[in-house]
Length: 385
Image 1 (cartoon, one colour):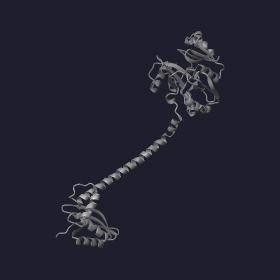
Image 2: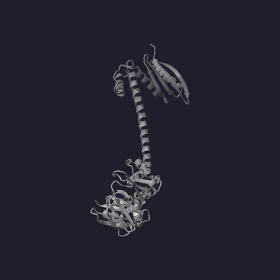
Image 3: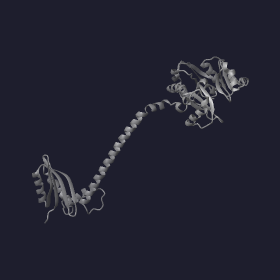
Image 4: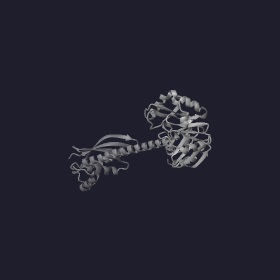
């Protein structure tokens, strides 16, 4: 096996944590003891360089077998209830992980959710990149036992568990296990009862069970980047929503402006066609109109509308405070309706007189007083000869 980082994670936060770095040929190249869980971040850099296996005491988990239903989260939840009678706790209080790849009945590892929460939060807070979290017994090869004189780890084809040495014979009777046959396998002694001694002994024969990881489903570890993204998720969503709203406002504003420009272009083209009815092809009405204005000069026969507009603009320009609000032109017969704003009635009479002198018939429409000014409507037609 390639080099790996092994960490022995105890049940409680204040307990010592043993760790070691194992070479590919099984030699221990580095090792150490951490005083508590708060010191776990010191191993983060190593866990990013090497496969990292976190081992937990086998007595904190239980291994069962159930009819395979699949490897989905829903299937694992359903398989809890197949082994309900074998459990000491309610199934809802347990986290279930599968040993993937096994044939026949599906092996399950059950661990209390409260314990999994403590381990998960400590590992995630330390930013450890963990390959797998598994009971220490599943780090042993099959047909192997490990004993320190106080407890015994047993890994064979039928059992994967920890047994107190004082209860070993009773366990053999209950499970109908041949103690002599079990002892004849690969039995290893542990020199010492502390976590470091156990981890050194496991490292010597280390062979983790493939397809096994307690860090699954709701207890999957997230990287620091993922945690930061989760922390900033709501602000990011709010920012995207604000930007989307701004984009929508700009889009609607552009659409409204475009609609106004289209309407303006339509009116310019309509005015051009009214001014020059003989023109069939309209490409650039503003440029074409300018060219025709230059060409026709004061030719009222060719374009009466333009001639009348020149008269009105000239007459209004001579009156201080006068302005044209609206112009409406109709053909057959030619008629121009003008809505004006003037300082008073005297100026209205002045403008009417100017237009009559130019040969137009002027009919007054509605005249309204608006503050210190008046609004008036004039209908202009060619005067009868």
